[in-house]
Amino acid sequence: MTGPVILVVGARPNFMKIAPIHAELAKRGIEQILLHTGQHYDENMSKVFFDDLGMPQPDIYLGIGSGSHATQTAKVMVEFEKVCKENNPSMVIVVGDVNSTVACSMVCAKEWIPCAHVEAGLRSFDREMPEEINRLVTDAIADYLLTPSPDGDENLRNEGVAEDRIKRVGNVMIDSLFNNLERAKASTIHSDLGIEKGNYGVLTLHRPSNVDDKDAFIGILEALEKIGDRISLVFPLHPRTKNRAEQFGLTQRLESIPNIVLTGPAGYLDFVALMAESKIVLTDSGGLQEETTALGIPCLTLRENTERPVTVTEGTNTIVGNDTQVILDAANDVLDNGGKAGRIPDLWDGKTAQRIADIIEEVIG
Ligand code: UD1
Image (cartoon, rainbow, N blue to C red; front, side, top):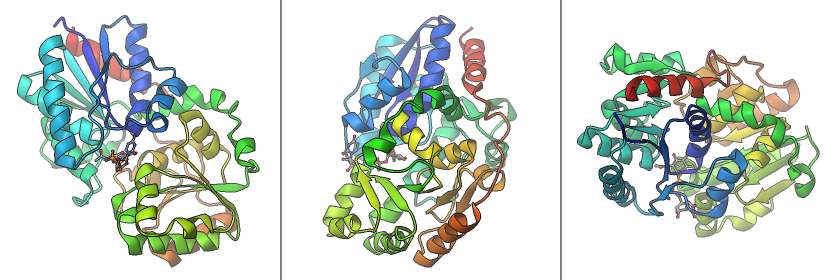
């Protein structure tokens, strides 16, 4: 096959997964196109990550923007199909579980373009999560399913996926984390925000189940009001969360949490610096569950389930849901007793991009 390899990014959690793959393909002289769908478009949700990760600006930008799930997914498909027809890619790489991931993998399936899904096989078994639908559909149609952990292989086998489509490569996001940890140490975020290294918690929230539901949002705020009495909390607000707080009239209550430090979305290096020096992370993100496990920082996940169980069985993660008292008890336990120790799972070794590039070379010949 002769055409370029297209690497697809769309939303914030994709950038740190594609950056190491892009760098490895460049090192090997493999022709590639970096394509950004534009699902996330604000400078602080997108551009800053390219700069922080040392990734060149995208070769192709589709400018899709926000919209309902159907609108966003369909727009990406229409535009991505045109790109494929023009560029005749030898292979397409999609990562994670966002709308851009499923949209591009569907185009590949119909255009008979070999497609690899990086971070395949993860399942929360909760079909109310849009990401779970994206994961299921992408894994049903992508040709190469590159998994981060044994549970991913197992889930795919249980869905009847043929063994030769499953390839365990490890966790590529951890490549980015390890590659950038030293550079993150130069971040001035702690002094910028006036917080003391080692003596604060980090909080992120953006799941519809937590922030689109007013009662759930209030329940979490009640827990934060008590945790804030014990420790400073840095809370970089996702656009969805900021919008919902305004809509529900909760902005002032949010701002009044004791010792809260509210900021806009943080850049990659600043955020890594924040996590690395924190005492506790509270989150509903997927990626943070993994990054905290790799860094050995106790993580409380404010969800009922996780598609990343290895962070619980081997890592530092605890699933606490969004009940006020359960969050509070778990946070107090971490602050009093230091939280779970954990270990770094196999193949989260910073060399996943090399294993992915080996597979790409094999496919494109
Ligand atoms: C998306 C992903 C989710 C991922 C998250 C990380 C899907 C289904 N969900 O959810 O898996 O964890 O990104 O952030 O793909 N907005 C801005 N500026 C931006 C981007 C979005 O203001 O740059 C606003 C949008 O207008 C919208 C809201 O934020 O109102 C949500 O954005 P959207 O991309 O639809 O979903 P996320 O909740 O970010």
